Image 1 (cartoon, each protein chain N blue to C red):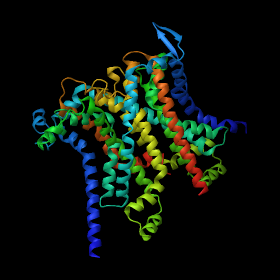
Image 2: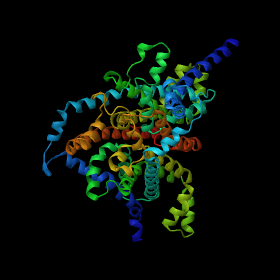
Image 3: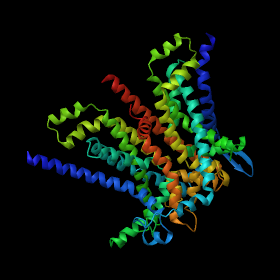
Image 4: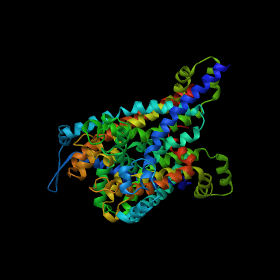
Length: 291
Length: 278
């Protein structure tokens, strides 16, 4: 009987060991590093001075501003994905083909997507070629090379790639809603718009919340690949984001302690959203149990 | 009656237009990549987005010959197979404990692991690098496989725990009565019954590792260890670029993904949405 008590931990042990090595210990090291100062191989306790230094760095402030600007993508993605999911749900002709296609970008490597798009958006690239061909010379701009346009262009690519996930997510949820709900509303004479507002959106509220939170976390902390491949943070610092800032600080300028301080802050911010998601989820579970 | 049918036709038409626009926007970059890989450089300059004159395969030869393409491909494969395989076994063992055993702090531990799913890899890069240097694991397959395995575990444990919970208790009890040990139950009952979930898991995880860039960039720096994605990302900063040959390389890197997706579409969709839709 004795062995029974330890049995669960024998099954859990390999996972826990790997998680401690890859998450547990490094997170502890991260916090320690962020409170240290290294010079000429000498390490000393630095208190919160690293945090003070980064907040005085205009590049860091700019990085945060760019991440916040990227949040504009979130409502666009949610609304567009909802719209497309509803159209697909109405089983328009060829909906399965459309679903397959719209989900495809989500699976492609960002590295590949980024490179292809950078040839499309080049000054002498495909897009400008087309615009010039149509006589729209004034629209043929330097999409990735100008400080004003580089970030919006990146945003377009991010939306292009990430939106399919929302469409498939919403569609999967819609398909599990009972048909009677929609039928009853139609019999009551609800028009298309009323149907969406009164049935679709309330039924989808949990997945909409989920997709919104996931997208916010993406914009704040999962856009490194896009920036690294398409602009490298440039032109100038026009597209630098927090992740790239950490990467450059650590591996270009060798300021590991400053990079650690930024990492701690980023971890805290994503942590807030993780708890928000867990909270929303537990609340909806309660609602399900009650209702 | 007639007015209603006309209206319905018109509505259907408008909807089709929306979907066609969305599809064109989605497919254009993929189309552009494909057609460019068959053009000569001279042809590309005058004809950037039209169909190629002939199905020229030279670019694929150039792409495959240049830049240690096969080496990069092999490195990506080693990392993917290694981390996906190891994480699958470890995650299933843990998921079995979460789904079918009672132990203290179970709920807390599960939620803790769940929350690790959203930790951005970039946050872990700095401390992992420091630790890996100390352990002598930078620029090794083992070190990078260890990191990928850890990053894959939270989602894998979550997915498999949910699946194991759906396996009827009666089957397990019947096996117990027949004298199966816990390990027997795991290997002979849970695992075979979980085949569909395991396919989903492998497909989703393999895709993630194959596409990953940041960890590969930092922990596989030696030229002969670089992965396919790292190799591709380096192409942009070149002064001289043979765009059609680059596109051919990108096409080769993308084709396995598209083929696997089209064959196992439902596994992808199920796996990717399993976090949110029950």
